[in-house]
Every structure is written in C-alpha cells, then in structure tokens.
Image 1 (spheres, rainbow, N blue to C red):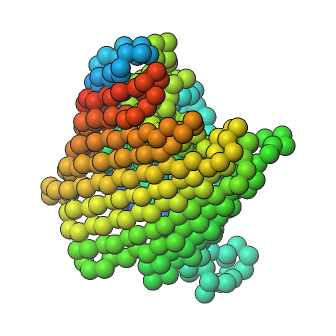
Image 2: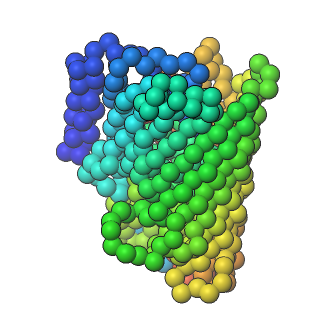
Length: 421
C-alpha cells in the first residue's frame, strides 16, 4: 500500500503539471538548479544574468528511488545484531513545487511523500529566494542585485558543500554513490542567508533560530550563525576549480541536530543494529553522530576539481562541542575524498571511489574511529533516469568492546534506481 501511494502521488503530480500548466511547464526557471543530470556539478543555484520571466510560473517535479540491499554485518558478539537479508527497501519519493512569483523571486517547497523514518507524507521545508528587487520598483538596486541573493525560510541550511552532493530522501541523482557521508551534516532550520557572488568569488552570511522542530515553547537555545567563503571558476575550457570554507556555530542549544537532522534516514538499512530494531525507529544506521547536542562549532573545507571527464571532491571537517552533562568540549575530525570518471557519448556512464574516515572522542574520553570505502558505478539512461551500483565496506575501530560497535563492520552490494524530474 505504501508503494502504491507513492506511485499515485507521482502520477498525480505529472498529470497536474501537464494538464494545468500546459506548455509553460517546459520553460526553465531562472536562478535554478536542475533536478536531473544537468544539475550534478552544480552547488548553489546559479545567478542568471538574463531573465525569462513572463508571469507566475509553477514547476511541479519529483523524485522516486528504490534500492536492493545485499549487506552483511558483524561485531564481537557481546551485543546480538539483528539478522538482515538480501531484499528491497521501501521505495522513497519526493514532491517538489517551484514557483516563479515575480521577476527574480522564486519559492521552493519539498515534501517527502515516503521516507525511511516517516512512511507517511510530510513537508521537509522550503524557502523564498530573491535575486531581484524589481517588485519594489523596477531597477531597484540593480547594480547591487546583479551580485546579491537572499534566501529565507524553514530550509536546508548552506553549511559546507557536501550537502549539495548527498541524497535527500528520493532526490539521489546528485549523489554518485548510494550512501551519504559518514558525518552527514544536514539540518533544516528557520533562517536567513545573504549571498554575494562576483568574478568567481562567493560569500555567504546566515543566521537561524537553531531549532529543527518549530514551536513557540521557550527553550534554552541561542541562534545559529553560519558563513561560507570561497572561489568557483571555469579556469580553462577543460578545468574548473572550486574551494570553499564554511562555519556553523551555536553557543547554546536545548537540542542541536546538525549531525542527526536528516529524518529521511540512512541508505544502509539496519546495519549494526541490535535485535528488535526497526527501519523506522533506527533510521540512522551506519552514520557517525558526535552527539554535540548542547553546543557545537563546526568548520568544513571543500575542494572540487573538474578536469575534462574527471572530477574530485574533498572534505575536511573539524567539529567541537558538548552533549548534555558535559563540562568540556570534545572534538571530531572528518576526512573524505572521492574521484569520479565520466565517460560515454554524453558522459552518461561513470565509475567512482570514495573513502571516508572519522576520528573523535566519545563521551567518557574514549577515542574511536570509523572508516568507509565505497566503490560505485552509474548509468544515466536519460537525463532523468539513473541506475547505480555500489560496494561498501565500513569498519568501527577502538569502540568499547561491550557496546554494539565493538569490532563491528559491514560490507556488501547495493543497487539503486533513480527517477528525478
């Protein structure tokens, strides 16, 4: 029934887009990242120099993803692991609504129709993006607005570059692999971001209310401050270079979710989970959460290199913070590098490898580390349809031998089918 419900939602969205919007649906939106193969090497939505705006324009899109999992897991036996087999996971689906409200003004809204943690539909979040101020007066501050962009909403915040290459529930076409990164920095908060982009340079300053779940109950939570600075340019016809540094900081929180804010869930279902675990409740399988619940300062540096058919993406992340009851900071470091080779007539095939490593201090002064190797390949059958295969091997090192992670490891094969439009 859940899979049937997903299919009905997607079919309905397509019917609405064709019957109600007609030929206008085929026009590209301004200042917009394509949700298909054309958007795979895009980070922030581009700042367009020309406009195609005529009237209010609605674009209905979506994504659907299904995986087959064949993974084995083990540990030292002190905590019994749930038995997992080879089979399909629950299909996930997204529904996207993008609306051009005025020249240079756009709204985005994403709904998870089905996800690992919430099989029922719920709104992920959305934002209001302003690239022109002509709604105030034609040409208002146009000399400034050719470089400025403003975003406000209950939205996925722009900390680091890794979140642009991760799977967001069913929206997996940007991720060349099936799993996300070991420390998966992702959170939706109510906030404001201001961008300045000129001659390849990019700067962003933002502030949020520091809350994942929104209500008016008074909590002991300070605002979150975030920033990004970097350079992104097509140096030659064959070589593109991008490097950025980002920071996320909150001095006090009743519960911060930077590393466990993805309610869609991990792609590795029930790995290293104990007997009695469920895919809905234990939805963060295989991830590393530093457990910085009450305060956190994280810095991420990213490099993206694209030379002809090769691309490299790298991460160095340093995170400091505290959990409930702790009186001193702990530190985690996150390293990741991936190399992709794209080939074929339209670069519709690719091969890739990603290595990730995390080390840090757990509560109780225990130094641990986790490493993951991913080998992947993909085939874009069309710009909207992608088939992936991945081999994954993950190891937990130096954990408390009485915990579930004592000498734990998992490895195996996953297949994923992606539709995104």
